[in-house]
Image (cartoon, rainbow, N blue to C red; front, top):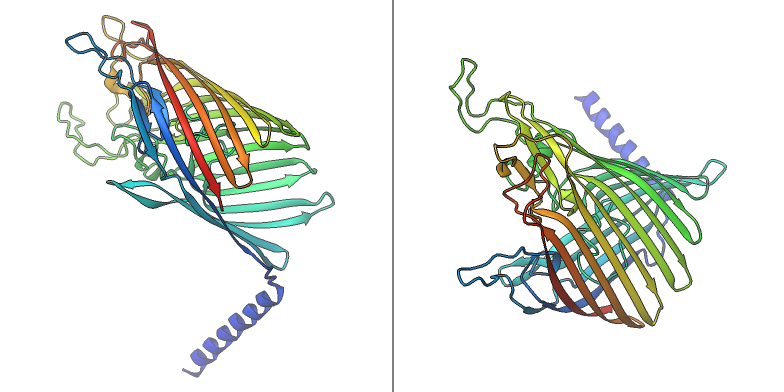
Length: 441
């Protein structure tokens, strides 16, 4: 008993001493809690029905033409709506030091989550940064980020005022992650880490779900390198997503001697690698940037993609192939008080990596294609142009943006052996006009 009490006393003294040591190194800066945010309201006009998320604010594409018995397009419906649910609140935390280690963080939310007719607070970002600077002779630095933050492929956005900030022509995603950044040689930075899907989910046989990663036991991986100069920034990287579309059987099969029951383990896997490059130049009030992604899948990044089943002969190991596309944007901004911005985006469907089985008419099975929920497997190409004019006076911004999104559709039920639409190709356009009022804290 005496030895136990002595051990507890020794452990307590050690914790107390460590606490005093930490306090002696801790630096509390003034104003280390920095609140920020803005009020934002928008009014939107659309010339036709479209696919959009969260009360039609997060815009994707115009819906394909569908005629009724009178030969009228049922989606040719102009609409007008107004919302203020993107109003945002956040707090930056900084100024904590423990010896050579610094700690900072962020908590941010908005009212974008709709619960019926009520806007509810939604968590956007919540992370802690732990970093060390002035390492080595070149003042190198090392940082670890833990928590929910922007996906590295989504951090660089086009110049516009819409909520989707260029998606689906630019990656859009924030997720829980463990990310490492090492800055060296003054202007270079290496980034690598693991990401877990939460609000932006991959698709599959069960629809959008985190389970494809959860039961696959392999997190999403990212690696990249950046150069940042006084007027020029260059960035390149790649995202690797490995999914288990099935991790167990959901039906019974007694057709062979090697029959299986519900819940039998399977070995399904599909891996999708999406590299990208980003360039940015800015001088004075003029800024221009461009990003291009060769996307395999990409639906978890709000891109138009997914994957397809091409071999189901082995009931314990189905084989899948990614749907591929090229996705790019070019945008610029000029002016300060009176600001003019414009973004142009282009997406092209490149089809599957592997040849798909087809029927006698040369069409693959549409049920074997797992496509982004916001998309349509009948999309061949997409084009968007968004010119914007804004007036900035202190913390107040008034802006008007015109969005022209045009999609080339084909018959989604008649895709070729690479899941590319080739029949009944036609163009559908939506004209969207958005007015925005923003007042920052």
